[in-house]
Image 1 (cartoon, helix red, strand yellow):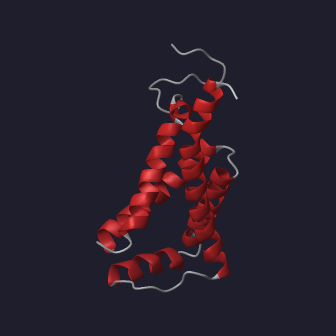
Image 2 (cartoon, one colour; image 1 turned 30 degrees about the horizontal axis):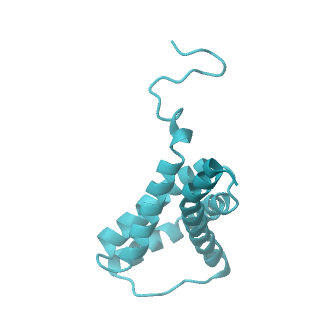
Length: 145
């Protein structure tokens, strides 16, 4: 193996590990919801009210879990990773805010991991955000003015 290829492989190994772990976490969370696992645990009043509101909407909790499942699968199979990260970004923010606001000091480790992994992967795939973050983007094949 050439030195450049070996160096590139070594640089990408952490990205693959974090991508796979984060994707697996979201796939598990999505599947667990649909098969009825993960219900319970210590919950405070604010948590119960929020989860009950999501569930009582009739669609929101299922939409969140389907989004987690799709985003996680995209990360695990290493296809459309930036799209998967984009789908999971608002869920990641909600996970962090849920644990920091409604359960301070409880389950904070998972929140830190999820946020750190998303930031790390967003940085690793930063070239994919170039078009999204440009102030003026051409429509179709038109050139930018």
